[in-house]
Length: 481
Image 1 (cartoon, one colour):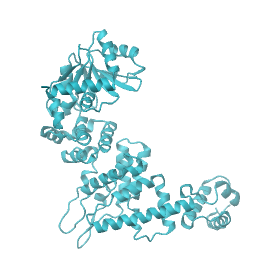
Image 2 (spheres, rainbow, N blue to C red):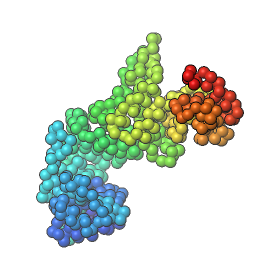
Image 3 (cartoon, one colour):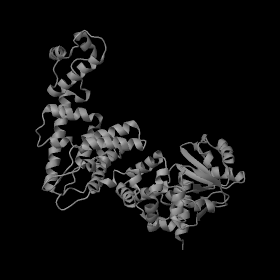
Image 4 (cartoon, rainbow, N blue to C red):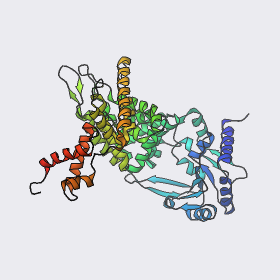
């Protein structure tokens, strides 16, 4: 009778053969030079789960220069950016690989970079890996592929349990980013986390500060883009790690007293995120901007919270404050400018719909809504609908119907007036000709005035637009013009 270990080995070998037969040819090249080569880490885990992709990690006793020499003959292209840490990357066909020399590494307590010592055994290499499910290997240079599982990663994989090969404190001291990876695996793979890991993260969370913002950002993105971001985010908050990587999130746990009731903003935020994800088909699938906007949409509430005499709480202008805070946080995490702009805009606009009432907006107000949202209109639709978390079904149905009516008006106006292409009735050249002025900031101001007029009144036509422009010029022309 086959053991779980036998089955895991069979699955890994079968999956590797189906998805990456070139691995065996690479192993032969290393073997010819007297070196070992093993598939290692996440790819072994994924091979057992039947989800092996085209990006593979290998480990070897060959030093980086020897690995480079082998890969130069075998691969289509190679990269040496990680050579200092023992890693040479390569590409062959549609497949990307990384080959890393056996190593052990220890972070200096005040450093972001590890001191790397190359090792001479795969056993020591596996011991320094983050979690047992990532500390399995498939040795490919033996007569038959040999499965190596020194820390019972197979059982942990079957139980969806996250443990470290050695002491969790040692693992997280070596690479503090592993604390965020623990959160990521709960979101991506549905793993539970061993109590020793939770205790270690809680006691060591401040150490994440030595990790670069870019690496933290990338782990946060992986959590957010998983099937279940809530569990990973909750782990960050519950262990205190969020205080250093996303401090705005735990601050949403506002104190609630019997006299000043308000919605649990933290739980509301996680629910909005889940509801925004459920609506992502409207955006073409998983969408980072959508998820970030849902996560950050209410972060301005703690700063704007005011107790209302007699009971209740207000958060006036929290969307304005929150938009600025979102910009600052995303910049600190080194997100790109487009993402920062889009997310902060959505946070700023997320309450706009609530001024719609029961449909009292004028066409001008609807045009403004469309114009301000611009290319993010679909995202704003999703965020606004997701932001309704009331348990009062009657209220929820009313809000949904009201937003349905707004969307219908938007479709109608866009069809009638081509609002996606909205421009003033006169362009810059016409403005300069009519006012007999040269290119200057005044042209831009006149253009904006005509655009605002177009938004308020709809199409004017060139003749009426010229009349309005001349009225504006009578007031705004420089005295010496």
